[in-house]
Amino acid sequence: MLDRLELNSNADQVSMVIHLADQTMQYREFAMNMIEATKNCDQPEMKAMAIQLGDVSKLAFVNNGDSMSASELRSLMDIGSSGSHKQQGLRHNFGQGAKAAGLKANKEGLQYYSCHKMECHSIGIGVLSDGTFGVTDPVSPVEESTALDLFGKDFYSDWVAVVLLGDDLDRHDTTKHPFKMGEEHPFGVNWLCQVLEMRFWMVPHGISVLVASDHGTRVIRGLQSQELVEETWVEYEPGVRIRYGLTPEDVKHKNKTHGHVGHFGFVHGNEVYGMLTNKGATRC
Image (cartoon, rainbow, N blue to C red; front, side, top):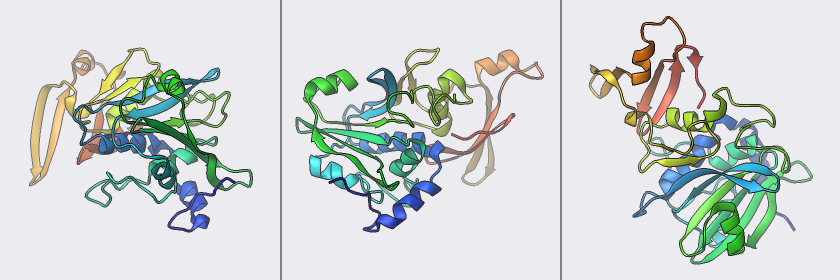
């Protein structure tokens, strides 16, 4: 029998939490989960990659951080649950949660994988037949050949992955159409690189983005790593500094009246908030 998802032992609150979630935040949430899960790794590995399910590509986030046993993986599926590595609160990670944002954006749900001590298990969460949210695919063992085919991962090291299934399991390519089937992101083919680059000021060790783009594989390190020329720092008040500068590409366009985009945002911790461009607000 499949189980409904719970929130602090109250399944009735789950639909409300997901309904109120901002689906555009799912990429921040999945990226932040990877950053936090790998913070104690000697050689952190974080990837956003395309995997093949049947005839369609799906976006997956894969990292070699804290993994889970089968029972731990099932417990983590409840909306109010978070991993032991997470620090919550206003001074730490105060996001709405990857599961809530992910389920808002993916009607078919999310598929989680965890390889722990040379055993791999998978579980799916999404919409049940009665319209409530629950476990759509109970915890089940995964063959090493399947893990190699999907993620290029064997069982000799621990790792965790989550796959975004989109609105249609057989037709929705979540590497190209992040929110609705057939609807492209305003950022175009490089949408995921730009979303992650503009969201994070600094990404320790970087996130490798291995999905389709016109630049090939990129490692996202955040806006701080962006090369600037004619750079100036201004002390606005104690604890608040403003950074001005131009990228080499900006210099080429600075005498033109249109055609290039400037950015402004507030940095807190390693994240950028309230990102604005000279074309208006940007949702990352």
